[in-house]
Image (cartoon, rainbow, N blue to C red; front, top):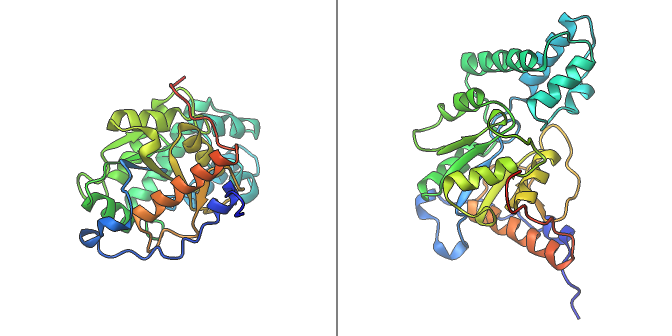
Length: 266
């Protein structure tokens, strides 16, 4: 008898066949399309984590402290005000709101001056989903004005909605942001593909009930029930990613390990 699949089996599913044809020629037989694609921002769509880390180091140093690369990695995926409180504990003598505002302005200035540094495969996958008519949203703990800078660098209509850290009561890993994104797009969370790069973000998307794929960037992401993973988005196909996320979610349910999807926002 073949043993039942486990969540780890699905998470390690062979995703080597992720090379996609041109978006207009994607055959329907390759699998179902998601009702929407929900994108994390920092580290998933754009490689802004080094800019954040440099800004944090500059701010802490200006207040007489020391901020290491390892310190910075502990903030990846956090709500901004949570990160601001940690920076206050390290000697930054400003209110959390001012810390968050200073960091956003620093990061935005760099992105506006130099343009976004896109993660490998991200723009191609965005274009593929857009050509297929799939609604897309940015779901981020950065603030709306930062996400807007990135969205505006894309062809009009690529990103339909933004749900940001200053729009929700509960930050990731709480599912509120992903639930709200699905709601404003008019789709069910379980029919969405969420793409993340951190454990915090992945837990948020999983708790919302989405088909979730993680592409780790600056921090390792542990095995999580229901989570599929890829090493890169380069050459990825939206149908295959959605299928992988759904398979991992189904395997976790069979194994009794699935995260219970949230039914309402807190």
